[in-house]
Image 1 (cartoon, each protein chain N blue to C red):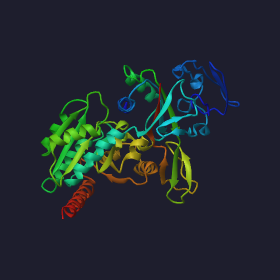
Image 2: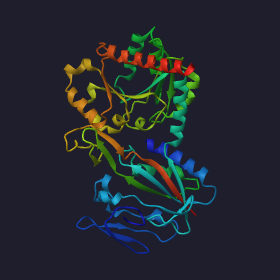
Image 3: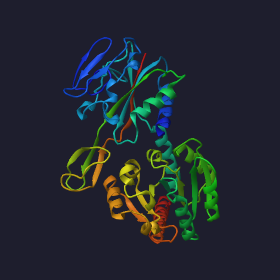
Image 4: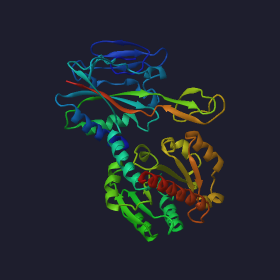
Amino acid sequence: MCAICGCGAAGHHHEDEGHVHGQGEGPVHVHAHGGEAGHLRDHVHAVEAEHDPGHAHGGEAGHAPVHVQGDEPGHVHGYARGLAAGARMLRIEQELLARNDRLAARNRGWLEARGIVALNLVGAPGTGKTSLLEETARRLAGAVEISVLEGDQETDADARRIRAAGCRALQINTGAGCHLDAAMIEGALARLFPARGSILFVENVGNLVCPALFDLGEAAKVVVLSVTEGDDKPLKYPHVFRAADVFVLNKTDLLPHVHFDVEACMTNARRMNPDLQIFRTSARTGEGMDVWCGWLAGLVEGRREVTMEGAR
Amino acid sequence: MHELSLMEDLVTTIEQKVERGRVAAVHLEIGRLSAVVPDALRFCFEVCAQGTRLEGAELCVREVPGRARCRACGAEQEIDLLPPPCACGSIELQVIAGRELRLEGVEVI
C-alpha cells in the first residue's frame, strides 16, 4: 500500500515531491505530492483515465486495512500513509449516519410504544406506491386506521389523493432533497400524530437509490417495483433491495402486455437479499391485495399484543 | 446525492469534536457495498468544508471489500455488488462485511 495516499499499488517508490507506483505490467501509477503541511490536497492520480472508474486504485489486495497504532488514548500517530507535517491524529470512530440513526431509533421507540406499525415505502417514480396505498386504505377501512406521510420534492398532490381515500395524510416536500431522513419524520410525527394501534405508511421520495441508506425508524422497509420497469431492476439497484425487508411487485395486471419474467425477477431479488418477503399486487384489479392487506392487519395485531403486554 | 447529506453531517460533527486547530485530513472507512461513491464523497466534502476549519482538508477513504457467507454451506467469499452464486450453487448469500460508513479520525494541525 502507498503510505502517502493509502492506495493499493504493489510496489512503489517515494520521493519528497512525488512518487511513482509500478504495478508489474499494468499501467504506471504516478502521484505528485506537494511538500508542505497541506500537501496531500495536491496529489494527482494520473492512472484514473486508464482504469475502470471503480477500480482506479489497483487490485483487491491494495485495499487492505490501514492499521493505526496509538501511543496515547485518543491521539493516534503513525497512520500508514504518514501524517501531514505537524499534525496529530485525533481518533473519532463514529458512524457517518450516527445522527440519522439516533433520531431513527427515537422515532422507532415513539412508534412502538404506541403500537404503531410504520412502513417505509421506497420505489421509483410512477411505480404505483400511491395507488397501492389508496387501494390498501379502501380495503382496510373500518378495520385498521391508516395514516400516511407523503414525501415528494414538490406538490401536495399525493397527500390529497390519500385524504380522498379516507386517511389522514401529511405532505413533506423535500425541495431539492432526494430522500426522507429521520429528522424530517420526527417533525412530521409531531404534526400528524398517528393513532395508537394504527399503520403509518411513509411514502418516500420516488427514487431507487438514495432512500436505501436512511433509516427513518420504520418497522420494515418496503421496496415497490412495477412490472413495467423490468425484471432486472433488483440487479441494477442492489442497494435498495439489500436494505429492504419486503418486496412488492406491483401492476401485475399489466403482465400480459410487457416482457417481464416474474420468476427471473424473484430470483434476482433473492440473490440480492434472501430474506425478502415478497408480495405480488395489482392496485387496479385487486389481484394479490387480500394477501398484502392480510399481512398488514397481522402486523398491527402483533404490535397491539406486544403493546398490551408491555402495559401489564 | 445522498453523499451530500452525509458530508454535511460529517463536517458538523468534526467541527464539534475538534475544539481548536485546522483539520488537514479526514479518514473514512467506506464499504464497497455501502451505496456510497467515494468520488462523490470527495466532491461533496469539498463543497461542505468551504468556510469551515475543514476547508482544504484531504478526504482519505479506505475502502472495505464486500464479504458474504453462504446460507447453504457456510462458505465465505469476497463479493462485489453482484455476487455470483456460491460454489455450492446457492444464491442465498448473507452480507457480512462491506457496508461500513465510518469516520475513523482526523488529522489536526
